[in-house]
Image 1 (cartoon, rainbow, N blue to C red):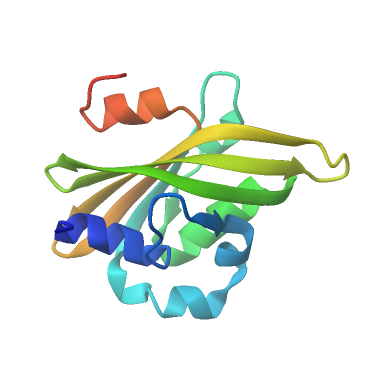
Image 2: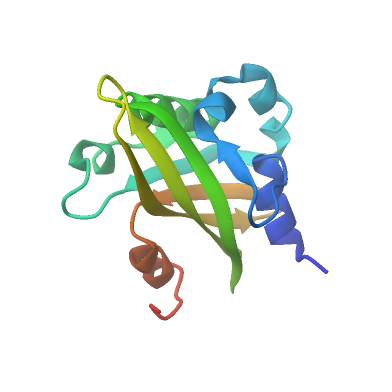
Length: 152
């Protein structure tokens, strides 16, 4: 049986199962998709993009709030990418309303066509039956530490 917090978090991205691929560019561009999920997140949803030291530091310095903030943050994040697809991996109930979703992104850089892969993670916090925060990570180890899990 899947715990309610995990089910809620996965429902936000159309309930993928491990091994399923999500086209983040398509998901983030669909206003209809997000209107159908508005009741799953807190109006004050806190959204953060946490990058390793060599990552896109400017994203770390911005605050994004609510569904509009989620979409705006992703719009900025996707600017350099022609493609950003995430293969869903492990989903972990980290306790205390925290759900860690790990994946592997395949991205294609706009203008050059160069493809690369990158481990990713989303640390979600659920409270009162709604997702109240989402942290998007390019370092699964850091996401695990922030979730209170031992780094593998």
